[in-house]
Image (cartoon, rainbow, N blue to C red):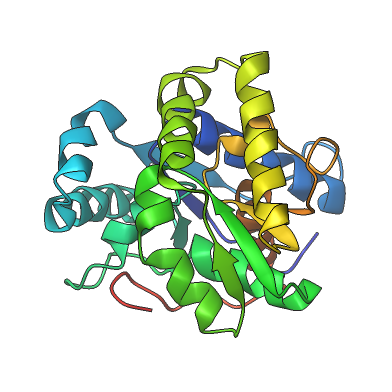
Length: 244
């Protein structure tokens, strides 16, 4: 038995990414602790359909307020920290406001720290259009002296549509997988030495096995970081929303 077994709270946004992260926490914990043993994990969330207009209008205050309610629910059932396996949500989570009810792991910080640990110098960023055009990853990478790039606008729009209309709905079309692979090829041609899959559904179709660049899988990296905290191998996070 481990001395510490902290209660993990998952702030669910998109369904497929949250479920994948939940599974990875369970599988990773059992690999370390033994069959059928894992920390307590509670997931609470919201219907993403209710937020799309707010994302399109960049109403980050309203989106942050929604997340604050979810984190409060997790705190009420005993979670000791939270993680949100949705990269786009972190744009709103970084908006200034009252402290969230729980400290949280920041997915952008987890991914960027791993990029630095691996020695990457220029990372391609693939996610929703909101994330690819947003401030979270430019800040996280630049703070560590790492360059970054995103595809051109027309490619970004198609990548975004695949996420929203297919991956989030558990659809995996061969032509869409090939489109993602071609986008990665384009990032490699721009001098990227790695690609960050910073939509938590993208790892459902892209991995090191079919990518021209080594991948930074935000879903699994976040799950691994959560296991470290839950088992006492890493301290509780201190971030409670707002600027990092």
